[in-house]
Length: 116
Image (cartoon, rainbow, N blue to C red; front, side):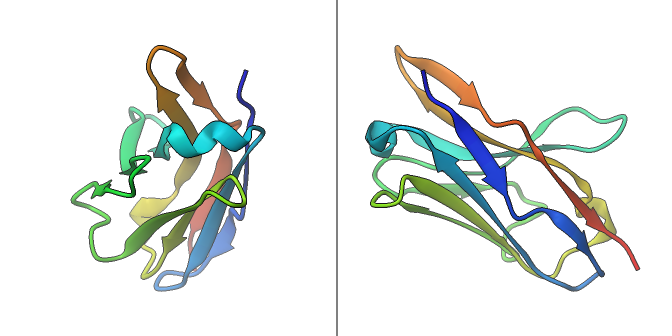
């Protein structure tokens, strides 16, 4: 069983930055693909960014050039640096870790609010 704990959410003004972190409970997380989804009120959960075990990354079009995902396998963490935040980035952000056949694990979510 993998436990994921997110941190770093909060309230920020438009144009500001936040850094989300997700800490995993196992060291073998390094062989998992990891990433972040978000869900805004009344909307479906959407993929924000993901990173493979080898470090390849993918981003949603809406965040490309503003968000950067990274992982630190020595610390069992994945991070999401969010710059130039917009009100439409407001959502609950969820960390996940996935590997077959183990399955997909989710964090509890952290709220990001972008508002003046």
